[in-house]
Image (tube, rainbow, N blue to C red; front, side, top):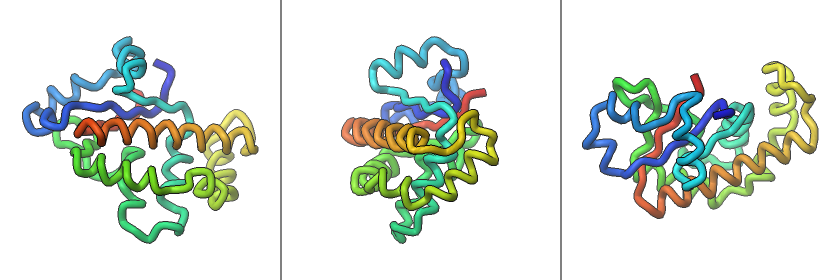
Length: 164
């Protein structure tokens, strides 16, 4: 697995029927080969080096005063006890999906251009902020939107993990 941050879909009832340890075992760990199979099936989505920038575009834009704008699609928010990972229940997944669907993702990135450029520089990104880096963030946000749409349609929960 060559991702830094990823999301994994689980059946919605798994959150209540599995122990925290069992939930943690359902989500692949780096370099677990299960990730590739899950991603190919649309059950996992990973990003490399854009998660922080995605978070900023989704939460610090000032364009959406609705609290849904701060949903933990990027891994913030409460952690499931015993797993150390955020777990979004099906209702939270549906709300996140609605927010992502209704957001002009390219506009969110454009609105935060200078903040994202400073953050990328501060984090030591290998390439300076540019239109191509911004396009990569937008593409990753679109993939995230599609991932959450699929999870919401299936009534799935989502666990967020940073690669270890």
